[in-house]
Image 1: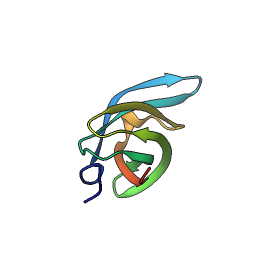
Image 2: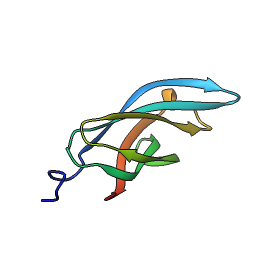
Image 3: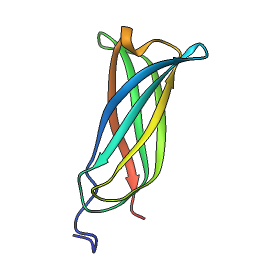
Image 4: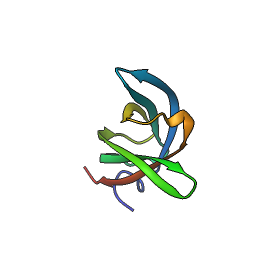
Length: 95
């Protein structure tokens, strides 16, 4: 266990989807349920049709302290409302 009390525990959820200038913005929120800070936290969104991934988008949160929330956005060419959007936290670094 580190001095911050464990490891980060990021949870990603969709806030909403907006159309912007011919593309789609999926606004996401990350809540770090752990007490430890996550630096360079990478979040990925995959658009799927059945079992096939048809488009991906990624973003990075520079600093997500424990028990805090951050918001960001993923841009897609295809409409996420017409496909299955899968969100996941992919990696982080210890600050």
